[in-house]
Amino acid sequence: MDERRIFRIVALALVGYYWLLAIVSPDGPAAERWAGGFSFLSNWNLTLNLLVALGAIKHEFDGQKRLDEPFIAAAMGVNIIVMLLYWVLRAMGALGEVVAYDSFADMFQNYYVHLGTSIILFAEAVFYSRPFENWKHSYGVYMVIFFGYIFWMEAFVSQRDDFPCGEVSCGFPYEFLNDLTNSGRAIFYAGVWMMGNLGFAASYRLVRYQVRRVGSKPAGE
Image (cartoon, rainbow, N blue to C red):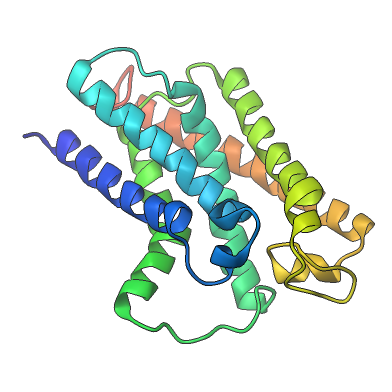
C-alpha cells in the first residue's frame, strides 16, 4: 500500500470519527442547541473536510474524475478562517473562559477540530489534488458557504436559541457575537470576508508553487 493511499485512509477515518462525534452525538452546549453541531462553523468545516476525504478515497480506489474538486479550494479558505478565528479569538478571551480539558481525548479532539483537520486538508490539497483547476467556480462555492453560514446563523440559529446571552442579544453560538449590534456584526463579517479572501489567495499561491516545484501537476496524480 503506497503512502498516498495510507494518508487518505487515515484522513477519512479521523474526519469521519470526529464528524460523527460533533454532528450525530454532540455533547456540551451543542447538544442543547436547536441546530446541534451545525450551529458552529468548525463543524461546517468538518463536513467540508469529510466531503473532500470521501472524494479522495473514492478517487484512490476507482480512479474516476473527482466530483469534489470544486469543494477542495473552498475548503482551504474555510479552514483558514476557522483556524485563525478560533486561535485568535481564544487568545483574546472572546470565546469565553478557557477551562481545563477533562481528558487527553477532549484535548486531542479540540486540537484536531481547530488545527489538525486543516493541516490534513491542506496536505491533501497541495500534494495530492488539483484544487484550483477552475478557481472561479471554487471561489463561487466558497462564497456560497461563507455567506450561507452567516445567513444560517442570523436567520435561524440565533432566532431559535436563547443562549448564550451577551450585552445586546442572545442565541448566537459564539458568545462575543451577542455583545455586538447588527452593525457591529456586519463590520466583523466584512473583516472575516477580507481575511478569507486573503486566505483563498494564499492557498492558490501555495498550490501554484507546489505545481511549479514538482512539475506540471501535483505529485500523486
